[in-house]
Length: 313
Image 1 (cartoon, rainbow, N blue to C red):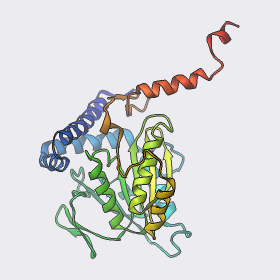
Image 2 (cartoon, rainbow, N blue to C red; image 1 turned 135 degrees about the vertical axis):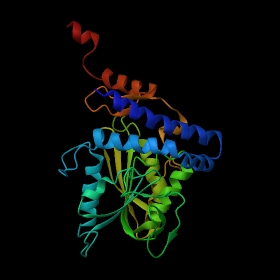
Image 3 (cartoon, rainbow, N blue to C red; image 1 turned 60 degrees about the vertical axis):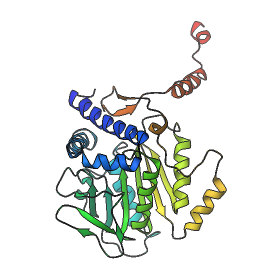
Image 4 (spheres, one colour; image 1 turned 60 degrees about the horizontal axis):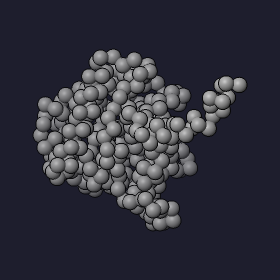
């Protein structure tokens, strides 16, 4: 069961996201984001809550075993290492993976010696994380411009991997999410990877259309999805920056379905079904089941040989 502290921390995170989305609907999303960045007290509270949730409840262990099925940190570590040190994709020696962790909070990847981490956030929870609004930070062709505690520019075609862990849902509009992914494309080396982790506590396949649309949308940018995996409370994806964007664009043309549009939507954009805390040991924040979920569950149970007639026999 979730503790009182975890419930309170999760509630704060949930309310910040909801308020930001509501503000973006009532006004210009970019202005809503700028206003949000000015609220230093709220940002500090948010950073503290995320840090405590992650270190006390979500990411208790940093051991890489490839067997812990629900660790978002381990998943990123294993996929990034497997990809970057694979001879198939990197037929040359690479000393460390240059990793950009956007929305890092507390720089969890810094403990892994295979990574050279640049950790950024709009509300850093630790000194090793630099302040940076990734949506607006300028890009250049040289190197990162770093002041005492912030990053004022980032280099193009520099990083081997970019991580968006629970980041895109923070941004209140599809256009901002698209801009964020396009910037990730620009800072990645050719064949670099973008690792996206998005919250998803629904049953496997429930958000299949949404994830297919993400694949289509990022394909138009020049990304090819090479991995998708559903963990207990998140969906994890790996996208590779194509050497030739025409390849991924052609895939999009061939596989486009009628519902697909070049947007990055999340379930909360169209509705807000509310959140609940998992009653199990994890105490993880998750979406309440919708009427569609309940209908699908009913259909699954209707197919089982456990009807009233069977029980009477």
